[in-house]
Image (cartoon, rainbow, N blue to C red):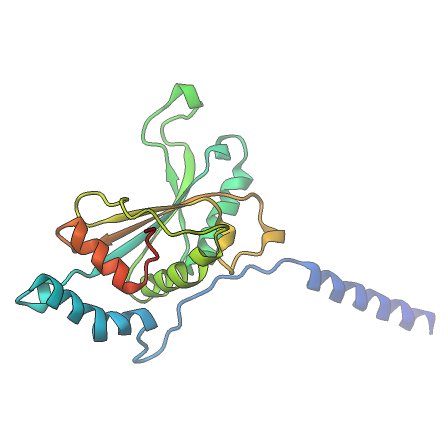
Length: 214
């Protein structure tokens, strides 16, 4: 009888331990035959037509569209603590639903004690369905969660129709569990489009729902 009770206690402890163990969550974009992301439907059915009228394009091929989104995270502390970099890779993977790759320093910077080839960050490039899903969550879920949010910088274009956005905390994405993160870290989001000018790119993003500051 005592042996059976001990067995039951051991099982209960194992169950509790399994519950407490953090589970890695990687949010993948919905996949299925014929699946079209919500934001892409809006682009195809409404935004593309509005842009064509606004700028007087003669062909649908001239209408600006998204090519890719690059999400990157610089981790300066990685030179002393590899665990921080691994945590950054995990967080970016959870946020984007795609495995991030570690990035290395291109040159040595003595002031910051960085050597050429040293791993100092991570990056992921999103295209297709995952790009559309990420943009939807960024604009409609994550950005509104920023404290005292008043909109994003309307002038952060590069002169060639591409937009860069800096985020100070990865915890604005609901997929990230604040209690399980290693460190609050910032990240950069670069949105690459086919727009020829910043004006066209800004109109594309605004119509898609990017909350620009007024």
